[in-house]
Length: 114
Image (tube, rainbow, N blue to C red):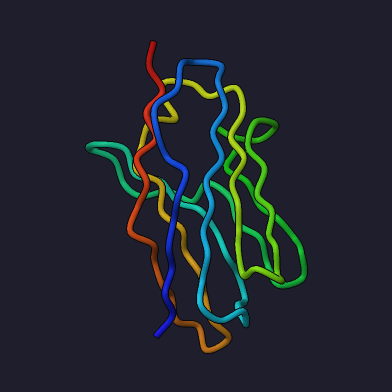
């Protein structure tokens, strides 16, 4: 069983920044990523980083969000800049193991409001 623990959510004004962190037990993952789910909407992929280092971003966050990892600390981060009200959602860390199992964090609320 892989444990996935998130931290770093909160409330910020439009244009502000937040950094989400996700630490995991174990390190052999095919992919680590961040998803989000706003009220009344489906969960969507925000950003992902693969074992190779390749990254993907949703069009809505390109140029504003950056995903990175720290393999020594088994951590993945999401730096969110120039936040907009439409970024308000619960953000979930996801990791996929070499055996294609998905594990999820507990969710972190991000609220962007003036």
